[in-house]
Length: 162
Image (tube, rainbow, N blue to C red; front, side, top):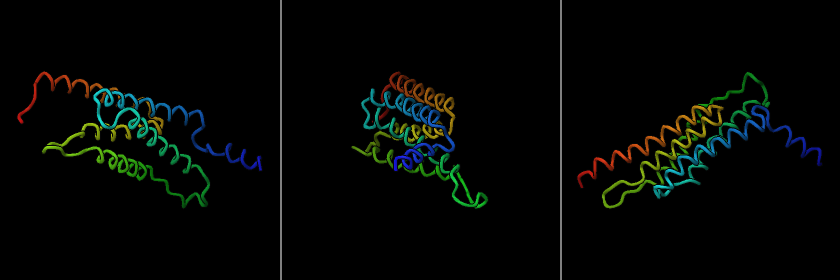
């Protein structure tokens, strides 16, 4: 019985070795956290934990898809792997979560930037999961810079018309 369990645990990393999977998941967690820290600092409803979880979940879905594509499911010619379908599914799921925090109050729409940052955290997780950590880091740096600069620009322009 123990041998069966050990074989099951040892044979699960067919496409992405455990160390690489760990690096990708950790990168997604950290990069999602960078965006989450900015949102947390601004006291937004979806902050550090939410962004970390969204990014890491998206990363995990891509790693799982790579693992599934490498597993024997019968005739190799009959196997169809479409990574775009998985990306669409992750995007739709994150968009659903993001839409849940956007609301209207007093005739004004609130939290759209936080919703968009959650969607972006999903994209960053997808990039990490597919091994594109430099791209994910670049996107993270750009979005945090944009969030900070646009906020400063908004302060210098002043409030818009009511």
